Image 1 (cartoon, rainbow, N blue to C red):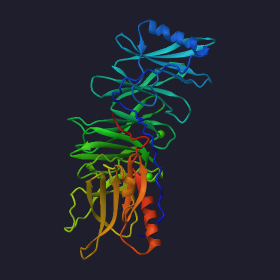
Image 2 (image 1 turned 30 degrees about the vertical axis):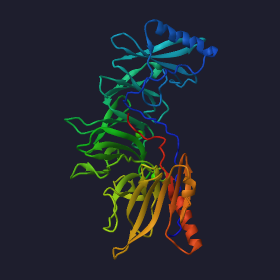
Image 3 (image 1 turned 180 degrees about the horizontal axis):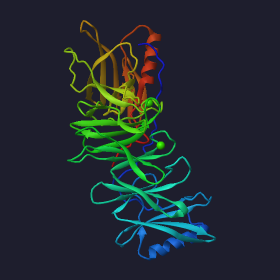
Image 4 (image 1 turned 120 degrees about the horizontal axis):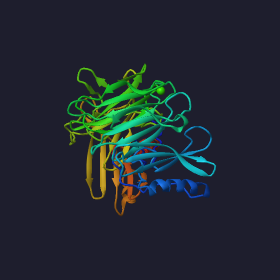
Length: 445
Ligand SMILES: [Ca+2]
Ligand SMILES: [Ca+2]
């Protein structure tokens, strides 16, 4: 095994589910004003007048802005206004109030009311190249997971409805590279229609649907929506849905202002990204470009007892024309929480055999010669229990790392060349990684 330079993965260990979308969250504690210094007492007093009139706080349930009172300089006058979210018993029960400070007092300068069961989300969006802020409010309408978004201009802090649309999920980013943000709305498939991603853009007076792209025909519920970069560093939306007995990822890019599904096969009307397990697109090699995992079945050998679902994951980056480039090849062990980067090997892994028992779980990888002869290349062990450390170094085994109550070890073929063996061991240690969570999985609740 030759020593190679490897791009070490930098994986963030913190699992933060930051997602926008129309899901139901567990009722979180309402976050009101961060503190109660004297200058906020007057604001609290103004808010209390709304509450005393029969309203209660109703914080947005998803997205990154979930406080029921948010301090923002909406009109760029250098001082912050307050936006507060309430639920009332009125005919339109959801109420947004914008408060502005005038000397010491805070007063309501405008209100928005709407129908729905809850605020799904709120966004402050720069829909033009200038710094002007537009307000978008997602309303949960009806009992299912459908939301409606209304977008408002805020000239003189007077909201004017400049467009609205339904969505199940959405993301806000500059999709077409004009430095202004757009809204990309995802609607799940129904019995009558395919899932669709729609591009909503501000034309100077209204926000309207300027382009859309369909998801895979036959795709089911949307599981993951995340933004990422194509190979040429243009942004795209990666949408993973259930599909038959697995999952499929549609990749929606914006080409010359038009949304395009970059991985759809026009003949089959489905994306080329089917996976049987819950493997979603991510930046596997930390180069800012999102890769999509596609499994490759390992060849099997009659000389080995292997189960049929043994495969490597091949991670591809996609460019704006849909061409894909292999970036990394991994073997992933979901049960034991690790993967190995098998990129750029000068031999082909053909099969592996898993074994479990007695506080040990092992996977052995093989190479197959043209004659069909099978050679063991590498075994990786996950060890638990009392004497796991001693078992990590028994015989030809060497320890890779420990994590919690697990010790990971490996075993390489016999060799008398101590230096080669030491280099090979070091390479295995470098290629071995624990499975961790993305900081932004894009998972949809
Ligand atoms: Ca744009
Ligand atoms: Ca990448």
